[in-house]
Length: 429
Image (cartoon, rainbow, N blue to C red; front, side):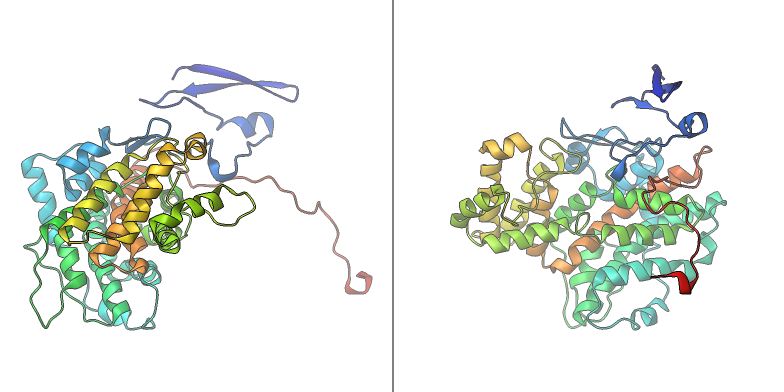
């Protein structure tokens, strides 16, 4: 704590505690505001409101910093792997060699889903969107795994966390296979997390499939970059759902539903569509002019961020990863990448972009990379959900274990009709 702040509301003066975090801005604790003054705060989108205390992720949007448990995202992506990052987010510290081995073993041996889930999938239309399948199938896990839905039982919570991280790639691959009309491919315990997922997505029974290590490492890095991002819309949704005591599978399904929105998880798909619309590098200037024109509905996707007012630190890593994938696959003259590179150079030099701080974000590059790997655009948000599951479950775990946790209940500024009496039908005009 760093002191107090006095507010004058009408004819009342109230003192509020000012709290300080480890790093980042101070916050004014207004939890007693309504009780003391009969007044609420008004903060649409909660952009100036801290909804919880958390030790998991820290973002400094002005400096372009993202930390998982204090570790810079750049270091984790370069030196670590996704399951190590999962352990870090869940338990607060990087694992020892023995802890890592044990964690990987338990995740690997929970990757299969109940065989009756196969019949559950058959209930969907053949052209069902993979995200619709994910919302339903993840929520349905609570119908198959009753032994890990009691949130008051620490052991059941632990089992649920491992199951979510382990089974999400299997469900995501099943959603993909179902959408393209191919048979499901079961996981293999001798493959690492990303390699297993690639095989479940792209292997077919009629021929052998060998995982490309460059693509596997690139996908693992993508998972790390998307693992958590503080109190974003989907994470806040998971916490809000969890505050009611809902089981963890239902909470994660709620997070997936929120992530599906184009303003959140669908941004990389939108960025890819924009690059396709621009078409070629020589068209970039024309489209930049359209973006600057307030009367033109065209918008550049993949630039700027709700939080980052500097270069998105994940975008730098993603740019390098994109080049590695395209080089490995022999894609030398990809028109989408050429357009992306031209746009990036303009964004970093043009006064319009600099003034508005419209720097390329992670969605700008991730869509190109996933497309090159062979994923259709309908799967982009599914992969986002797969990666973000560990962040959601870590945030849910932290909330459940917080003794001060209470059910979420935002207030409102009511602007509807005041109290009025019910008119009989004969009295209505």
